[in-house]
Length: 185
Image (tube, rainbow, N blue to C red; front, side, top):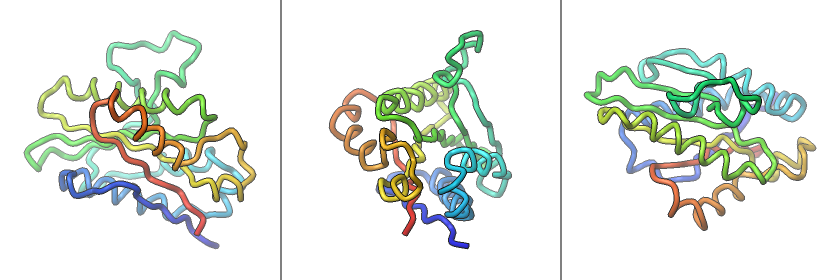
């Protein structure tokens, strides 16, 4: 059974040690996914797999499906627009509080802006507390993986997210963003 390959498409040099450790643990956790399962069960298996992440030396707290802003409620019908898929938090023993916000980006191209905005909103909400350093990560697939798994052809791939961010959103959205890229090498 082949496992997933998970690439990181940004320079991690500027990140804190806590952020680097949490991202690497997330990456290693995703590598455990079976390529066969991802091809057949698609984002359902990825979301389920993310629920199995446990605390560790670098990840102290894990939150699933949290509001993108603390002042929102969920009385709306469009719940998915207000929820972020995952947040990882360090223990604070480093002298700060580091968070990694993760959004699964397995959507039609029209959702690209929404996915970036969800990450930006959560980071803004986190950083109301000046001791918090928050960053956003999209979890997206390469076109090769999407095509091999017969995913909807309208789904944006990781290179589309990266290109649109660099062309448009880099000037509009503050904070650090990166993409963890699921690949079928």
